[in-house]
Image (cartoon, rainbow, N blue to C red; front, side, top):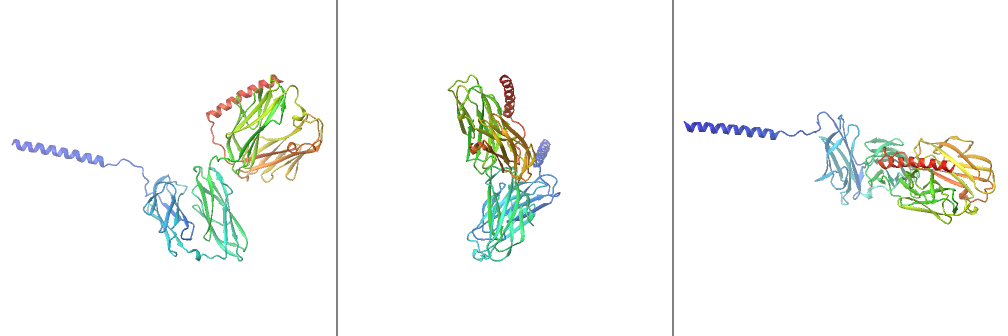
Length: 553
């Protein structure tokens, strides 16, 4: 009886242990919640193309996979591209991984509006069998898309009639959000008329905007079919595209096009602030001598002889000892120790002029040297002026000074700019029957209001009957920048002065050139702490300038 009870107790304990183990297994088997897209409430749209019908052994192909979902929210999916025979992988975008003979992208985010583009570049085996077919296939959640390309021998490609194709956006560098204008030219160098098909594949970092002619565009693949070109003629096509905001610096944007199998390409490097290799800075007050209690005006010339738009430049200018700050052009800020300009833009092959005005202190000793320095991008410019007792000699003063300034550092298409033109007579004889001519770039400028000026063709003209020694003539006018003005373009215009009494003056004293850089993008919003500090310092400097001017008055 005791043994039977012991047996019952052991059985009960075993049953309880079994139930405990079973419950533990159930708890362990329950998976943790994972956010995963349901495939039942969405459709997948998948395409695959390389933009070429034929390829030669040793050639190259670029496959573009586009995948899109009609789901209401962004979701994740996996995409696979099976490479064809004779294809050797060169590069896969979006961190695609090679698995056997396939490229796999895991956890690709599908936006409900924008199609996701995945790009794979391959080279064709030089020993690929001529006459064979290269077949690639893309798959995503059961959807399939294929592309076939025939392998042809170079000897089978007919030489006559011949077509040449070229493509260029005219830029070596471009920044995020910048608009690019690709010009494609097709030339028929044969002696007969013919038709052709032009194809282009948009690089992954670009967003298609528009194109010219009767074209078809689908997921970044652009095609012009059945295009007629006469013997010896040239036809041009244009594609407008924008660099994506998230484009990574130093990425190469390779735009490829082909005409009946004849390829051409253009390469543009993404760079937010490209290195300007040919850049110069100079500073001068155009004086050899200066006397105490006089005003001195320094001009800082920034010259960009490179083909790249210089943006985001900072310029600093330190006034000499015995010179007190009075004013600075182009939004220059006085920090208490120097003048500073931030976010300066200089157009390709252009020039910017910044002006800083100072007052020579009355205690400046005769014989002292006023050393003015200006610097930017590690470059330093220096100007030296000697302090003398009394008025400076006539030979060291500028015989005449013609200047022109704008009310801003750079412009956006559609902006209104106000110019100020000034002519000073610092000679000892009067100027008579003076003619001021300001030549404008009327392609991108429209005059809105010209004070007392007459518009004659592409120039504004003013007449000054007489300008006595020491007298100053000044005029202001406004222009509107055309909405078609291209990004990075330099709008130049030249103002000249002529008349009786100006004949003996040098050309540089009677001619003044200005340049405005066109920028379509705005700088990032929000002010950093250092910008706020500079602003407060500038306000303090303005207070000092006001007190100084009252004291001088």
